[in-house]
Length: 359
Image: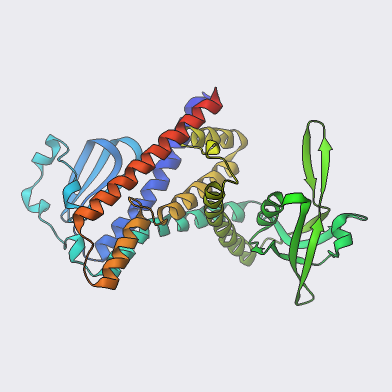
């Protein structure tokens, strides 16, 4: 029963995250006057199809996201016809109502391509807003207690200090502070705090390692105040947590590139489903937190300047805007195909890691 529930929740989360992304592309494409050939809910064989305003709306068998097909976006990768249901449509309804993608102004196309990722970030913000509005707004970054005789007291940390940054990295929320401290080598970090309206730098602030049975934990030596729940706090915390999640994506990628984190720790769809199952066993709040993390992750990842991702398309559009002519379509298709092969390979590798960890 738990496995079935995990699969249902996973399908709903994956579906919502991808669908909100495609909805961003769809709405902005329509507003920009671009001919949208198809807006599909799900992937695979079409279960239901109708045409309205020159756009085919489809519900497909596999509930794992969807896609938006725009006229002229990629002539050599057009979607094939999907079944006999299309033959029953009124031919008048299938007439294009907009312009091909390449004929629309570059700045409009940039908005259309970026809209998917922006919608993911907005969804993440709204989910976090909902969580905080009906739950605990969390902890502040203002110190409420300093342990006597601790290294942080010796370094000069005081009650009332608001932690702004750790090792030069701005901290949006208290989770940011803990994340940075855990990454600190030699149990020593530089803190930037706000004190009496000014900014104070505390260098080489020490932290202790505490043995607890077979595990070792870090004792930070201080506690922070809880946040007062009000509209301003909830909105600002939701915004700051969105930024925190977004930056985690970049920091994780940098860690992979510099070798701080092994590629063997990469997780794919199987690992994500497993994490969703763990979240589901802990309650609705954890599921919503996972949804927020995944949608923000997808939004940020899609903006990376990697071929086949929205970020790669934005690079080509930026080049077109600068040089006043589009990148040759064959070259763009070749580069995107290479990028797609790389991404598929990465997913396969990450999935292999997931399976090894499971067994």
